[in-house]
Image 1 (cartoon, rainbow, N blue to C red):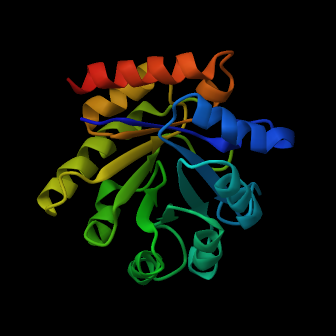
Image 2: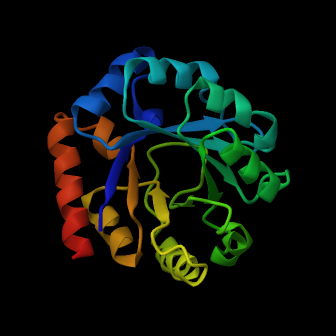
Image 3: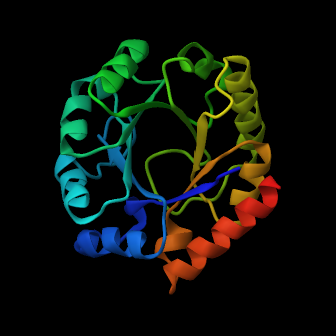
Length: 223
């Protein structure tokens, strides 16, 4: 299994985001994860298209953009135009999820769906054919630095099983929230293929060493 490591820009120093983007690439990350919060779907406001555009200018790695928004359909094109390679929307959003996923693909980005911790794995089933990625939140969305919620582990396994039944065994399953060497390995054992890590990577003195350690622990768990 090829496990990918994506640092989460939400955990970076907000005053030095360009340097933080370059740091992720230099550390050997497979891509960069950007959380977009609208202050309605989640109780916080974060970045906008301009930050995605900045990241696209200064890095060649993949930009994985997660829209924690009540109406992601109204903003999808702006983030794709800004440089998003993948765009994930929540099944809990107040929009036509299937239609929005189709639109994201039409615009040339990889469509993905996101599940909050309290949302059942089955909510993803109708959209697995239309999506290339599923992200299982392992903390409540809205704030960084939270503790990993172990009761989400069975959901990861259920989503993996459902993706296989849907004829998409290679679907990327992401996890985000409280991810480090130990929790990341636990998620990989359940079927996760992409680890989004914020505090454990941006808080490390040597991000390169921590990316490598996270990758090694994940690969050992997938063996």
